[in-house]
Length: 346
Image 1 (cartoon, one colour):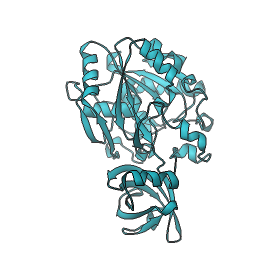
Image 2 (image 1 turned 90 degrees about the vertical axis):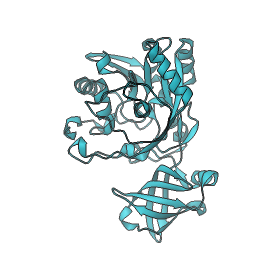
Image 3 (image 1 turned 90 degrees about the horizontal axis):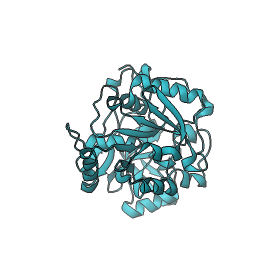
Image 4 (image 1 turned 45 degrees about the horizontal axis):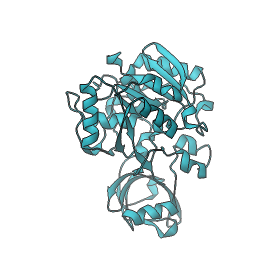
């Protein structure tokens, strides 16, 4: 498909630079074909039923943005995938100044050696420590990796350390937040529990590749970056039982959806999963595991806008985004939310 089909004009004023102060107080656009309802996230319990399953991505964001020096040249690095034993894939700027075997020095004695150079500024870095030692070093040398559309307009501060994490996140490794989950509060989770909605936690360590623009003219030519994910046996069992009982599986965020679809077979059975995924979902994709999707509002020409167009229908999402812009919904990571219904189930 032509990428231009997924373009739209977004006023800069609608890019949210901070979340609303009460997480579950964000606006909430419920979209079902031509029906659009302007709600608030606290209304979510009205749209779920006892026995439905909410699937949360429990990853936590690490301070993955680093500034260092190669000789006298300033180098900015954003980690995006952990290859283990202190080796990370990263995006570097300016990457053209780097060569294999170059050493980048960061604060606190942290160093990284360039072991490989790829395309579009991607490099592989071998750090001089690993495991818990590297994690502690990142606390000293790194900062919270806010998306570029926020970081370019204001500096990262202490409030982001809280705002850019979900209340239920527990497994560190992401370099971008699963932003649909930022709207949940303990109060909202309690209300959903009281309605006998089931919770399942999966893990997808979101990479910085999620923010990369689509630079090709046709979706067939776009290459997705891999991200590591895991679904355990118990989570898969709960999801499959819900479908067997006629209940719905609701992905909280595109990261949860992409992981579930990666782990589902042709019959829609979700299996335990522990691997990388580079699944790229565009209109025409046949969904197998997810019935509803809660998600924020995404960038024009982005793989995520393509995904929601595949899920709820291209015409439906084009109209929904036009409505959101007209009604001054707040976009992107710190913005408002939406609830989408799968097109072939409506």
